[in-house]
Image 1 (tube, rainbow, N blue to C red):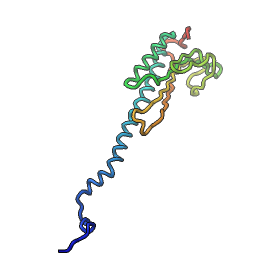
Image 2 (tube, rainbow, N blue to C red; image 1 turned 180 degrees about the vertical axis):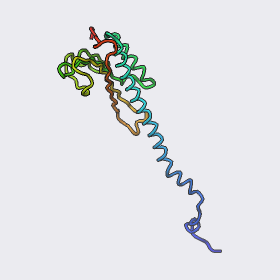
Image 3 (tube, rainbow, N blue to C red; image 1 turned 90 degrees about the vertical axis):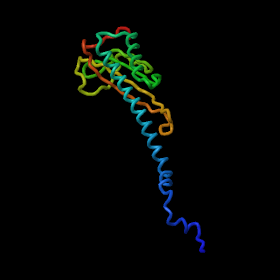
Image 4 (cartoon, rainbow, N blue to C red; image 1 turned 30 degrees about the horizontal axis):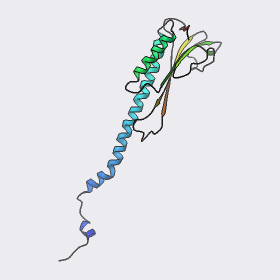
Length: 178
């Protein structure tokens, strides 16, 4: 009887090839799957933050006048939109801007987690958004997203959004207490 060596006996054996290939490719597939799940969570947080910014501008633009208490309530609604994400990293600011002699200036501003802009300071807005004498509500939001898994995005990712909306009822929304 002829004894063959280990390697010569296994030379034509194809049993277990699929298991070896799976063991090689499984970590890559799992990494991609978890990465897509993390990306989707971040994208959803970014979309909710943008929606909160748009909603703040929309609610303010529907008023003739707002107060600081009313704006605080509107900011609180913005925080509710962020659910199921934490509202703590959400910072919001809403301002009324009027263009005078080609320069956009702040009429009033209020922030939640973000400093209010100085009254009568200039602001850069898209060209041709408003003409001289017209007003626009500018809503800004930032959200510091911290991934729950931290293996692909180990640091904070800051999302930001600016939303512009013209007042609907009056030419300029007033805020006497801002």
